[in-house]
Image (cartoon, rainbow, N blue to C red; front, side):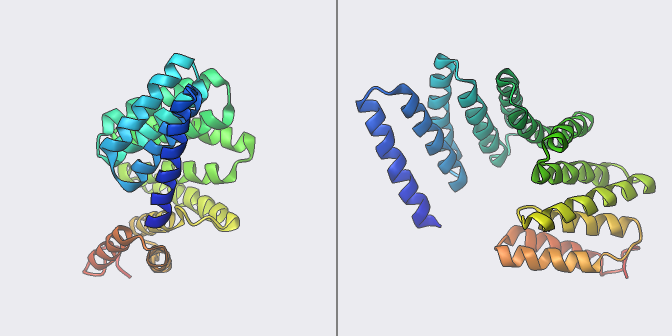
Amino acid sequence: RAGRIDAALRYLEQARSIAQSEKDSILEARANLQLGAVYGVQGKYDRAKTFLERALKAFENQNDHQGLVDVYTNLGASAASAKKDQAALACHLKALTAARKLKDDNKIARCLLNTAFAYATAAQWKKAVNSHRDSLEIARRLQDRRLEAFNLYGIAGIVIDRDQRSTEITKAITFLDEAIAILTECGDRSILCDCLFKRAQAKCMARQDYRKDIGKAFDIAKQMGISWLEEAILSWKNQHNEGNPCRF
């Protein structure tokens, strides 16, 4: 993977150099955007921000709303990864504003999803749920099943983390049932492990047998090499095998 990322950076630097020599500001902005995105994947957030802010300036000068959606989305992701929650939220809100100017429902729905997660991280729970619901409504209208699953997972997660009422936990399990079915049908494992882990937690709270879900979640995390999630699942499993009321 590291080799592919290094190759991508070389090609993007070449594209940026060509754009500069040709005085092609649009191509240069796009190259800066992609460079920022790749550095963000590498975890080099300061370097990512440098290139993304260059792209931002160009897109603002060109009044390029498509470019603004992309650059603010990447700035938000970089800020979130650097644990700068308020900055991440501000960026995702700006991406949403740009998407609405484009009147592109698909982009609006995705920006709403990002905004919902940012609101949740910032502990603005009501706004998070409302953003998820707005995104979910559009996803269902567009028949975007993957986006639908992400929003169902987001809503369920907020309910499980914030609301201990049994009726709400039961609803959360239903949302996760639907999300897991969609992801399984689509062959998408990107958040399948997270959904299974979250459903195990909800089932534990509802005094239901969670062992199958926790086992599947751990297996998928291990197969995908997500070490931090493996550790989180093991820690939770061990804790709940040591006399916790929901133990089976």
